[in-house]
Each structure stands twice: as structure tokens, then as C-alpha cells.
Length: 314
Image (cartoon, rainbow, N blue to C red):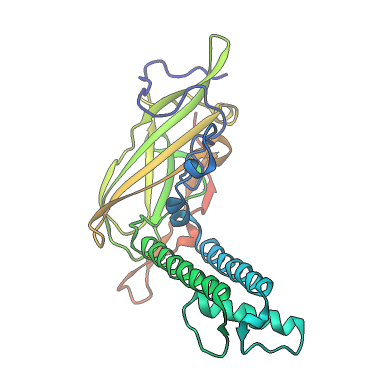
């Protein structure tokens, strides 16, 4: 195993454990931790879970929940007896259930067209309870929609890879990031931590180091930002060769904080890179250019991972 640069001070406030296994931070920025010893209702914040769900999964969950709720209530009405509902088309059992289902949907949404109506105390009680749950459900869904729309987010796209490229009189670790929405970000600041596995008293432990970027902060974040950590005597990767980068168990934990001028709030986004995602002897290619009329700048986000192989003098 590669011996680390002993001149570098270890970071003790990373928040991670030296004996933790696997990736510390997933590519999407969430921590790779599974929690046990607590019941499922206390384990998850359902509000945060629904806020963080991908768009189509969120809509899918709402639609499925709506259909299941109406199927359950339609089954209850059918079990009570369709004679307790007026206006039902009794031409076939399937048509009866379809009418009961749509009556349930109308009650759940409090639309109530009027063709079908409950008769009797039991059917009326179930319809009243369903209308109450419908109002409660739509209030919750509206709150979730508002929370998702109003939650400040950085909307940053990171490169899938990091590279070791020639830099000045040596080499440097580089990755890049770019905003992909039309939000206005400023005062962007990056923090880079490196988790490197090494042998300590016969056991593998992760040591954490804070990597100093060449440019830690930028005032305006409108184009892509190539973040550079120069590998010199102040770097834990000092004298690392290509084989060392391939064989070492490395994870780069990235956090970017920026100020969102629209929401007047600070936004944070994280990602990470592990050893197989670090390409030795490569450099990124430009991803923006001038428009044909020379009046604006075109940022091509499809090129965020474009790179070419280069030679590095070790």
C-alpha cells in the first residue's frame, strides 16, 4: 500500500468514521449510511423523503396512492351494497363496480356531480369520512408540491470523472462543475476532503485530509468551474504515480456552497469521486464558446465530461 505524505496534517473534523466501509458519500450527494435499531415510522422523515424524491417518482406515488384509496373505498361501498347508492348502472357487475369507483373518486375530490348519491346512514357515513380524507390528502399533496417548488437548490452538474492533468510545473487533480438552471449563484465556495485507506497496526483505516484548491471561492458562478488541487509537497498525493492512484482506495468528498440570489439563501450540493472515477493523464476540453454573432457565450453542458489523454512527467 502506498505510503502517505507524512507532512500533511490529518483532518479530524470530517464527520466520518475511520473504520466505516464502502463509499462515504454517494454520487447524488447523499450519505451512504443505513440506520437500524428504530422503527420505520421514526426512522424516516416522510416530508423530507417526498421532497427529495425524483419528479416522476413523486407524481407516480401520488397517482398510485389516489387510485388505491379510491379502490379501497369503492370496495367498501360495494360490500355495503349498491342498493345504498342511487343512480348506479346495473347492467353488469363490472359496470356496477366502475360506477362505484367513479362515485368514490367524485367523493374523494369533493366534486359530487350528483348522478350517484348515498342512501342510508352507513353509506353516508363512509362518504363523509372519504370526503374528509380527500380534503386532508389534497392539503398534504398541495403542501408537498409547494415545498418542492419553493425549496432552494443549487442545480449544479458535476463531471462524472476527476482527472490528474499537467499543471504549471507539475500535476494537479481536477474536476469541474457547472450550473444547469437559470438560477443566479454567487459567492460559490468549494471544500474538498480526501479519504485515503491505509494500513494502521494491521488494520485498514481511512485517513481524512483537507485538499487545498487553487481557487477556493469565485464571486460569480455563471459558467463551468474547473476546480484544481495542485499536487505538491503540501498534498497527500505528493509523489503518487499512476499505479498508486489505481491501487489506492481513495474517495474525494466534494461540497459546494453558493448564495442563491433569487431565494436570498445559501444552497449546498455534494458529490464524491472514488479511485475508478479518477483518470490519470487526462485533461478536460473546453465546454463553452462564443455564439456565431459574438454577442453571447454558449455553455455546452453535454461536454462536461469531455477530456483527452495527455502524458505526465512523474
